[in-house]
Amino acid sequence: MSEQDKYAAMFQKLTGQTGTTETQEETDIIDTSNVTERGLPTTNSKCSKCDNDTAYWYLQQIRGADESE
Image (cartoon, rainbow, N blue to C red; front, side, top):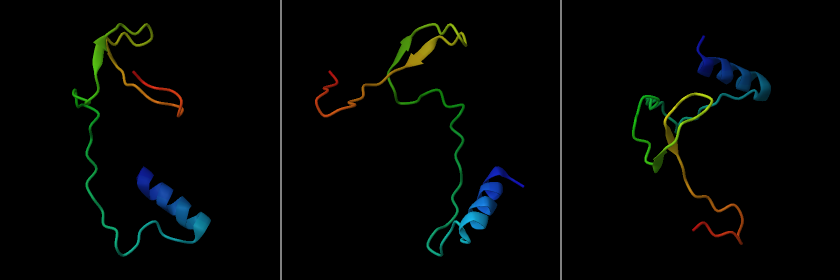
């Protein structure tokens, strides 16, 4: 039994409902774990935990008064 089937069975057991409706359809899952381009800016920085040499970064506004550059 796949992980998706396990979660669907748990959902149905807890709610008495299935997880899909007539208007939903299954789509293919695209594995992007091996994609090198993530669309984020990068910098060269060595990680002390995993020895990876590329770091991805982004700006995030966390409150209304904060301004990200």
